[in-house]
Image 1 (cartoon, rainbow, N blue to C red):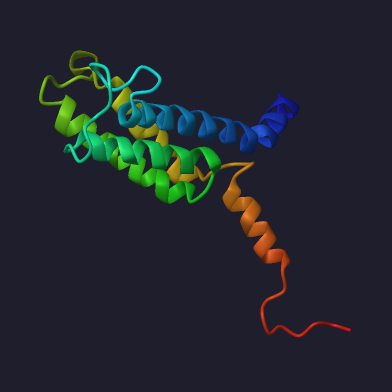
Image 2: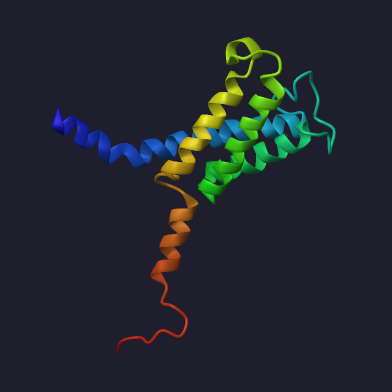
Length: 149
C-alpha cells in the first residue's frame, strides 16, 4: 500500500492540473454560451444582452476566468473571483427559491464555487502557464547582476 500511495502522491500535480483544465474549460464554455449564444446559448436560447445585471457580468467572469484557470495563468486570483461569483449566484439568485441546492437548482453554482475555492488553496498543479513563465523568469539573470567569468 505505501508504494501505491507514493505513486498517487507523485501524480497529484498532474491530477490537479487535469481538474483545473476541466473546470476552466467547462466554466469558459458556460460563459461563451451566455455571451455569444454558442454551444446552446444562454438559458432560454440566444445570448445575454450586454450590460444586463448580473447575468452579463457573470458571463464575462465565466469566460475570462475560465480561460485563465484553464491556461493556469493567475490561477489563484482568477479562481477566487470565479468562486465568489458562483457564491453570489447561489446565495442571491438560487437560494431565494429554496434552501437546498436540489430544491433551488443551484447545484452547479455550489459545485463551481467549491471547486474554484479548492483551486485557490491548492494552486494550479502541473502544466500551468504561471509555472512555465515563472521558470523562464527565474532562469534569466537579473538586470545589473554580475556574471561570473
